[in-house]
Image (cartoon, rainbow over all chains, first blue to last red; front, side):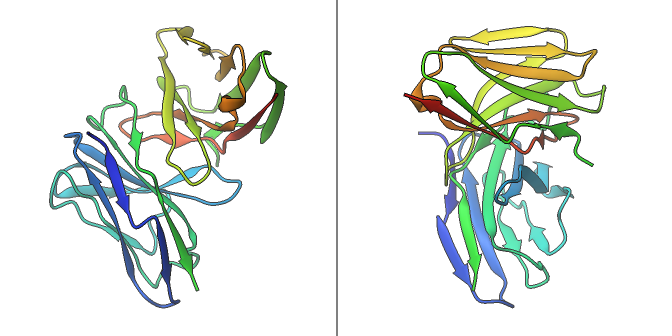
Amino acid sequence: DGGITQSPKYLFRKEGQNVTLSCEQNLNHDAMYWYRQDPGQGLRLIYYSQIVNDFQKGDIAEGYSVSREKKESFPLTVTSAQKNPTAFYLCASSIQGHRYNEQFFGPGTRLTVL
Amino acid sequence: DQQVKQNSPSLSVQEGRISILNCDYTNSMFDYFLWYKKYPAEGPTFLISISSIKDKNEDGRFTVFLNKSAKHLSLHIVPSQPGDSAVYFCAASPKGKYIFGTGTRLKVLA
């Protein structure tokens, strides 16, 4: 079954710690994306990658970092520099970074900073 | 600056009636638009899309209308069903990115 997996579903971290969220896809998609969703807000783009070993900042990249060493994987690290990290994080992919393709989303990871 | 806007945060509709969800955008260069449906604690799922060369696209109970001169699109769901209750996001896709609106929570009343 093809799809996007995110793990874990729920994640707790202490203030000041870095944490890495996993995102894996077996859809053979070139482009991958990270969003965060806060209550009452839409999806805000953190980082995106249209090809392996390349990625671009989205609208709210500060305090986050990513890597794209493999086509299938696009992990997101939430660093201690992120001032308000508690949120629902969504990973997505699309066939190419072309504008006429829809994105497919993973189930999300809810991060809570204690 | 919100480039994609959904001005109605919520909408309630009776089962069997039409649901109309609206979305406005500011950039006339946007040429591809999508609607997603999202349940709580899940990722959004793609519903329907439209490119700017069309003004209407249908898929079963879902129809999207695009008015380029007004920079406005709408999603019609007919007939509405209780299972349609969710948050609906519109999105515009310029140059490989996707810009999402803030969402409209639809509640279909049985």
